[in-house]
Image (cartoon, rainbow, N blue to C red):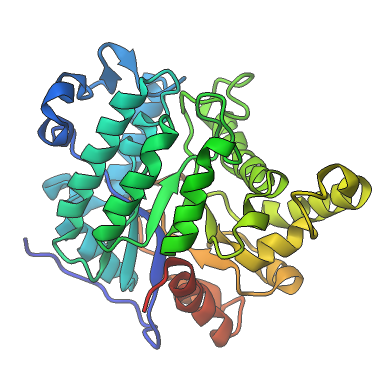
Length: 373
């Protein structure tokens, strides 16, 4: 494939994209699912055995989002979202390493009623496919695996399997799964193993989930549901990990909160600390210091480049906990015309922040979070 690349001006240091995605080709599920589960491969209209994967996703929403994605990524119109196109876009954006999260895989495992064994089959199929996808250039395409929260007893074995692939991170939804919060005792062996193996955990929400999701019970538009689901589910996931004592018991566990911006963090830290001051007696056995101290010690938050208050966040908590994520190839902003301009993230940040801070956000912090050598 011949691709003309426009390379950004700034290249004094490397960029690690902490939150990129794949668009899994539809036929990959039938190819990678184990024989007993091949008949559960999703159909072209995103259904499994006639049951929709997505919740309240109208045909207009799907059409408009598909149109925006194609306008933003003209290379994919011809070639699809292949690993080669992914690498070409990384070069366009000046990105050196891309941590790759799922799209459809994340949605499939968010069908709350799914049988645990079937969810396990989808988990293994996705991880096996992603291993092949990233093997095209494993130094630049860094896989983030899935685990099966529908079946807590399977989570440790799958975590060890992908750790043997050399992977450094796993992806989980913030929502309850089968009534279990992230702090449920059933997940304790998983948190222990993540800490022991040095595996980072990326908490990643997605709209139209068939899990309990903030806002989905009262709104029908993607506009409203997405405004609620991403930040509010992350806020509650962070609270669950703190209130349930997960971060207290596992001080070396690294948790990232992705694709929800960082503006909510200031309010949430203040709010949790305020409530802790009043009600510490109720949770003191599991929460032994202020919630903000746990967050600053072991949590990371992906900011959105369009947030114009990043400097204020840094004034409050410092610059050690923020990460950059492109969200490639997803699009959740307005796109006009036939081709979106690939923005230069360094140029955007250097207008707001000193160069040494930009380097921390684009490389040093993600290197610490994901355990890059």
